[in-house]
Length: 303
Length: 243
Image 1 (cartoon, rainbow over the protein chains, first blue to last red):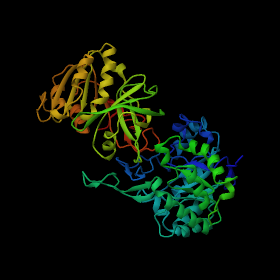
Image 2 (cartoon, helix red, strand yellow):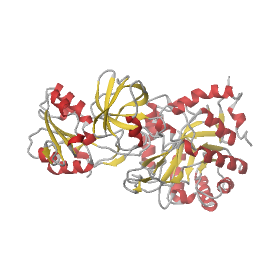
Image 3 (cartoon, each protein chain N blue to C red):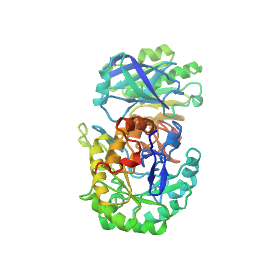
Image 4 (cartoon, each protein chain N blue to C red):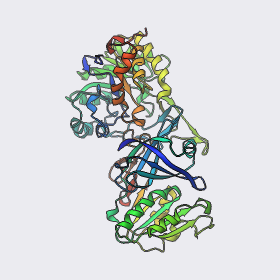
C-alpha cells in the first residue's frame, strides 16, 4: 500500500490534494458532484473584510493551454462567510478548511484573519498578498519583501492557526519575498498565484477582459510554477503549498519533487469538476509506476 | 449536472455559418427548456457553453454559429466522433407563468432554446406565437420546424430580404400576448424591454469560465442580489433585471 499522507504546518492531510481558492467556491457546488471529504482539504473563495462584487464582465478569456480571469475577489464579506457559507459547508465537509484571505490594507488582513481564526472549521489561514485583479491592494502587498513581512506580522499577531502566505510570481525574486515572510513568522508559503496576462480580440481590437488584464492560469503555467517552488524550497525551511497548472497525478508528483508539501489544483477544476477526485484515485497507480511508497518522502526530492 | 460522453449523430450546416448538431447519450440531467450544455473540445482549454435546442431521452440537438476557433473546430466534427459534455446546466425557462398565449422571441443564435420551449408550451396546451429575428434571409433557420409544432410564426429580417423588414419589436408591438420568453443579443433585449407589455423571462449570454457556478466568471447584478449567469441563470425574470 502506498502512503498519500502528508503533514501541513502541523495538521495531518489524508493526501496533499487541495482545490485552489477561487476555483472551488465554498465547496458545496462540488459536493453535489462527489464526496469532497476525499480531498486533503480545500482553500475557499478569497474573503475580504467587506462584501465585493468584483470586476465588470467579461472576466474570462481563453489562452493556449490556459485561461485568464479577472474576477476581482467577488465574495460576500467575512461576516457572511462565517454566518452563511461555513454552516453550509459543515453539511458536506467534515475536515478543516483552508481560509483564503485578501485585503486592501494591513488592518483589513488582520481583521479578516482574526475573525476566521476563531472558526473551528478553519485549519489554516492562507493570506493572499498576490491577487493581480484588484487595484490598490492584493498583489501590491506581495511584490515587496517589506510589505509581505508587514502583512505576515500583523496577521500572526492576532491569530493562533498556521498562517500560509500566498505569493505572486509577478516579481523579480520570489525567494527573497518568501524568506521575508518566513522571518516575519509565516508558517508556510503557497505559490504561485496567477501570472499577469492579457488577450486582445482581433475583431474589436480591444482587450477581451473588461479589466484589460487578468491572472493567467492553467497547464501552460506549470513550468513557471515548478521553477518558483524549486527556488523557494532552496530558500526557506517552512512547508510550501505548490500550485500552478497542475492537472494530473504526474503533475502533483512533479510539484512535490520541486519542494511542495501539499499541492493545489486551480483552473483544472473549472474544466473537469471531478479532477481532484480523479487525481486522488490515480495517485497510487502513478506512485507505483515511479516506485514511490510514500508521498512525504519525495518532498523536495529534485534538489 | 453530470459529465457524460456523447456521440455525434449528425452535424450539418442549416444556414449561413449556422450548424445543427445532434448528440446521443444520457440526457437525464436536463430538466427544463432553456438549459445548456458545456462541451470540451480537443485542443481548447475552456469548454464551449451551448444552449439545448431540443432533447429527448437519448439525444440532444444544439445549434451553433461559427464565430471563432472553437466553433470552427466543432463544424469540422463528424458523426461517430465523441465529445465530453457537462449536461443539465443552468436554470432554464419556467413555463408555469406563461398564461394562455405566450410569445417567444428569438434573435439569431438566440432562436435555438426557443424551440424546445415552444414544444413544451404547445404540449401544455398554450397558444404560442413565435417571432424569429435574423439579419438576412441566408441566416434563417427553423421557421418550418416551429410551424410544425403548431405555433404562429413571424419572421423578421433587418435588411428586409424575408418576412417583415426590421426587428422583432416591429412585430411584437402589434401582438397580443399573456407573457414573453426571449433569447438573443443585448440590443434586442433593450428594444424589447422598452415596448413589452407583460412579465416575462430573458435568457442571457455571458463569457463563462466553468459553466457550473464555481469560478464567478459570469457574475451579474440583479435588483436583489448578485447572481451567476451560468448557475442562477441564464434565464432571469424581467422584474429582477438591472438594465
